[in-house]
Amino acid sequence: MPATALHKFITFIGLMSILHTAYSAAQHRSYLRITEQEFIALPIDILIQGIISLFIVMYGVMYIAGDFKEIRAVVDLENKSWETLRNLPSFQIFSHRGKSLAS
Amino acid sequence: MLGKIKTKQEKGEIIAYSESAVVNNAAVVEYCRISMAALSGSTAGLLGLTGLYGFGFYIFAVFGLWAMLLLKAGGQWKKYFISRRNLLTSGFFGGLFISIWYGTCILIEKMFRFKGLYFLTKYVVN
Image (cartoon, rainbow over all chains, first blue to last red; front, side, top):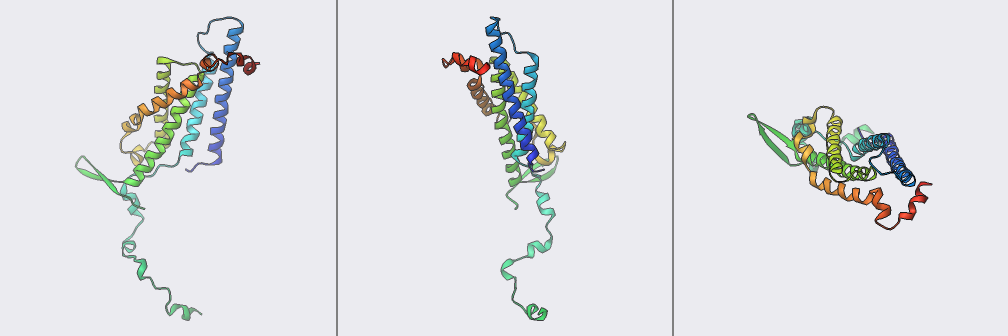
C-alpha cells in the first residue's frame, strides 16, 4: 500500500500531539517551580500522551518510508514466460506489408 | 528488474532471494529506524527521562517498531525479510546514539537552565 494523504495527515497529527505534550510538560514544570515543589515525575496523562503520539508518528512514517518487496527471486520470474526470453528488440520489424494491407 | 540473486540453504533446499528486493526492504527499515530513534529520543527528552530510564524508553521504542514492522508485513514476514531477529537488532547502536543526541538536545530542563535561557520559561508558559 503506497503512502496516501491520510498517512501524511496521521504523521502531522502525531507531531502536533508531541508538541502539545512538550507544552504540557513545560507547563507542569513551571507550575511546580511557582508552587516550589520538587519535581518527581510527570503526570501519567502527559506520559501516556507522549508515548501514544510517538507510536502514531511511527505508524505514519512507516507508510511514508515505502513498500516492502517480496524477497523470493521466484516472484520476479513468475510473470515471465518463455517468450520473454526469446524476445530480442533488435530484431523487431515495424515496417512491413501489414501497413499497406491495413490501409 | 531482476537484480543479483542471493541464495540460502535451509533444510536441504535452496532459496533464492532477489538482491534488489532485499536492499529495498532494508532501506525502508533503515528509514523507519532512524526516524524512530530521533522521535523516541526527543520524546524521552521532553518527558524528562534521563539515564537508564531513557535507555529503557529506547528499548521500548525498538520493540514497538519491530512489532509495527511485522504488523505492516501482515504476519508473513518470511515473504519480506530473511531474518526476523536481524530486523530487531540491526542498527541498534546507531539508533541509540541518534536517540541520545536528540534526547539531550530536547531535554526541556536543560534547554532553559543550561543555555542560560532560564528567563524564557515565563514566556513559554504564560
